Image (cartoon, rainbow, N blue to C red; front, side, top):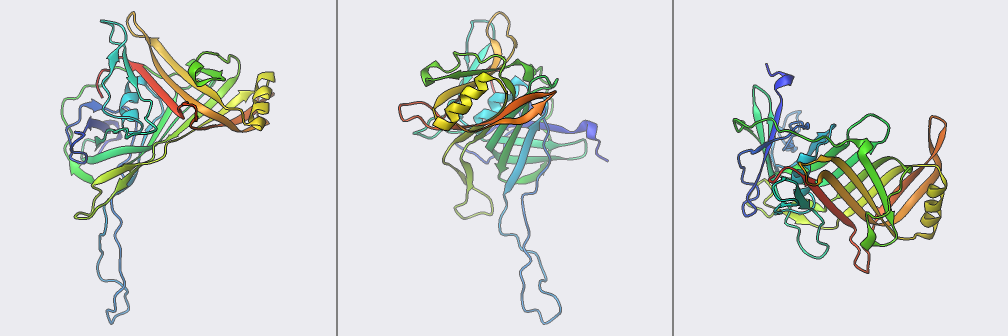
Length: 333
């Protein structure tokens, strides 16, 4: 009998020239994922001359379109893997400070060219059986957290994959040392110009946030097999939901929402210092407008709060819809 305590999830980066060909795992994934279904049998009706419509199942396609990676206690070292199969792949991390292992991972996607996202092979199972999923890529990522709620940042990635195959775990991978992403260490910056993003700290304003990024990635079929053989890349979308302190600053952004004034919003989630170099960080900036702000849309401990939705847009003067950067002590996926 399989034991829950022995559940294990591991992953490895597939060759960019052979996506869908499984590879051995190189890292453990400390979040959670279930083993999804990769097939739906059809039961076609035929004239059988009996009181039954179907006599056999038929399989027309294999596809995993519901593989969800969840990390209830987010950690910085997992971000390069998740973002590389969502926004931009084939990235070589660059050290910030010589000898300090503070590696920078730039994930700002191109708006005019392919982003060459990476595909992963995942191994999911327990002490009885492992299951292998190849060609795993992310369609949507959600990063969320609440201030004053004694919690870590939560991460969820909705993925597709080629198929599910019973397999054997890659052996001898070690449990990684991690740096937690603490929700209370999230800072909000709002600036009028994209060039100044991350400059003006808005202290005393952010209560909680949920950043949603849609990659535009999707599976493609071209015949010759029941499984996908390629993927496509289309529009990138980004939205930021926030609960704001119901103060005069939030009221000012209500006016900006009505006027549809564009601006740059950046979230900085910080961790501890890496040696004597930079800190762990996730910096995510959006250019766009407030789609909606509801004054007194929420309440906590007698305080009125504004519920806001910020819509990412492409700036015709060159502003990105989205810019993402990670710094952590992990140099490889």
